[in-house]
Length: 182
Image (cartoon, rainbow, N blue to C red):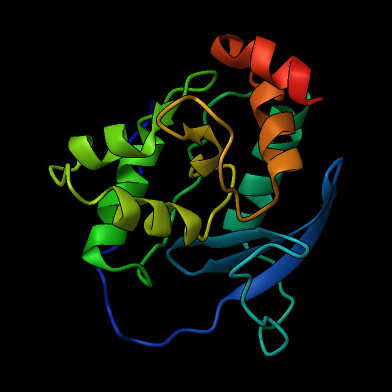
């Protein structure tokens, strides 16, 4: 897994460029700054920003992400190396998002495991909130986080998409549960 550069929290406003790509699970809005990919949201996803003021323009980071997503959706790519610009996250959120990046394809972790990994074992609810605010779905794999009992819980892009992403990744630990939920 190639390390990704996370930009420290800054209050400097920025206007990213955007493009929408079409996937099996619906349109994905991708956004980028000159530093990297800063967002990826499904249509109807919770916490999706109003991008109406963002210019539609080319970006090498969006192009890179699109190529890797195309491979991912046909099960040819399990890791991403597109540079990320997550400057709009707090230090706590960035710590959670870095922990998400460490979950390998096809594996899962619980919210409490993430809380322990970032050194905040009592912050399980705050971890859940940070996971829900992840601005780069799929690439920062928040879909790989499950409840303490292994239940499919919360996904800003919808539980059906979470289940489909885990099945795509052959999350074998969950195959019986996912088959029953299908």
